[in-house]
Amino acid sequence: MQASHNNASGPGIIQTENLTKMYSGGVRALDNLTLSVEQGEIFGYLGPNGAGKTTTIRLLLDLIRPTSGSASIWGLDVNRNSLEVRRRIGYLPGELSLWDGQTATQVVRYLRNLRGGVDMTYVHSLAERLQFDMTKKIRSYSQGNKRKLGLILAMMSKPDLLILDEPTSGLDPLMQQTFYQMMREVRSEGRTVFLSSHILGEVQAICDRVGILRGGQLRSVQRVADLMQADFRWVTLTFREPAEVAWLAAVPEVGSVTVDGRVVRLQLTGDFDPLLRAIGDHYVENIKVQEPSLEEIFLSFYGDGETESQREPATPMQMEAR
Amino acid sequence: MTGVILLETLRREWRQPIYWGLGLGVLGLMMFIFIPDVDALQQYADLIETLPPALMQMFGVEDASEVATPAGFLAFGYYASVTLIVAAYAVYTGLKITANEEENGSLDMIMSQPVTRTRVLLEKFAAYSVICALLILVSHLGLEFGRITSPVIAIDGGLMLQTSLNLLPAMLLVLAVTALAAVSLPRRGWAAGVAAAFVGLSYFIDFLGSEASETVIAALRPVSFFTYADSGAVIQTGLVPANVLLLVVAAALIMAGALWFFRRRDLSL
Image 1 (cartoon, rainbow over the protein chains, first blue to last red):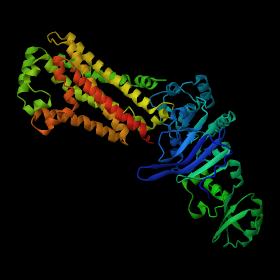
Image 2 (image 1 turned 180 degrees about the vertical axis):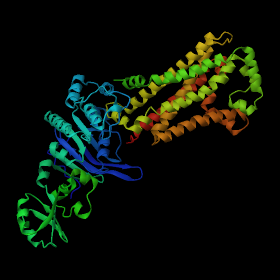
Image 3 (image 1 turned 30 degrees about the vertical axis):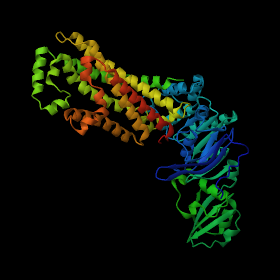
């Protein structure tokens, strides 16, 4: 597998070149990240906790400085031209910390005054769409409501680029749909969204392209539509008798078959019907179907033979993706 | 827009220095209430004279006769302890410049806006300097009320005001030291410890140095900011411009150092 597959059609508005960040103690949080995000797309940035997603975002916002490599947005170096870059960015951090004793309105006013050029009518329209009451103090809001406020703060200046770290974390399903719609509108206006997530459904719903990060390294970047073609499921069949599975090899779209006594695990790409017909002559006690993790999809897309879940139990990230 | 951070900080924080100032003001008022007349002051001075010299020194009294005057008594009974209290307040307040918001993550929200680190640090420092000044002025109201209403104690109001204002340069210095510690150390607790140690060491160097005049510690007295915030001298003769200037310049230089660190470092997550 290559270190990166940007698959971008033109020069990106976000460009990183061998971006590396090492923290004290020699922890390499980001390793030679070369990435390009195009104007007007929703780019999903995926990976388990600790993969380097937030580090990338903080580097782009100049909150931290790279150990080596460079990053630019709209051709402007994110460190040297930090002010100009941040003027055009709306940011939602993964863990939103605000001032507990202030009301949402006071927080909005403060950040509006810092930024300038924010239309309060638009702020109220965002609050209305997200069904958010701006009169309460921050400490009284639930996690979901804080997330809504974070989205309002990120979007209120209609920035050219939205950088959102786990934007739907804590939002109820209805609000998630509203959020998806808002992001589609942002894209239709030619603006760009860079969002980090570990939720497959979210990525499938709105992203044009996704990049997967693991251990600080970009494993792959791909269009979501292409990825979904590589979609598959894990099927675990428990037979009454120890299984003879040579006949499974003839079943279309079945692969990676492993046998453990009466239990057969296989990878199914496509419809269930051929498999169900093939096992019709055998007594099956149980059938279990598991959606693959994002990482497995990526690995399968690039033809990596043995996938993660064949070697070890699912990680928390994989479980969430399911 | 310039001044937004300063004004927002003042909007959020203006109550606290008033409460602290009122507390110190009440303490100052009590000093006047407890000074019934000049005879009583003399008796008080006689009592002080019975204390061991080291203990007198600890209270900032070199000569017991100093406290026999209203001004001396105020310097000994009020300003000596209040200098330490406001220095501690400056440590507490200095942590609010960046350390508290950095530790809880809200600094990220500010720094993701189009504002420079220089502006954030300087506007916050300016805001907390105003807050320190507000504390001093409110606390001075208590003293002034006591001075005006005291039937027997005559004390120069102008000198008393100068002595209160003399607390401000020391507070600015401690604010700057705390800000420097906060931006150069990775944890708020470490910064608080370093700043508190700075205040504590300064106090004891001044105290021990003035007690043991022929020792190394006495030679170190010039590095203690308490040496330049000598309320006892100011209440007798007024502000010493050189001392004020030295403390203000030192605070400015330390803030320049804090700025240098803050502009170059990573914000912690």
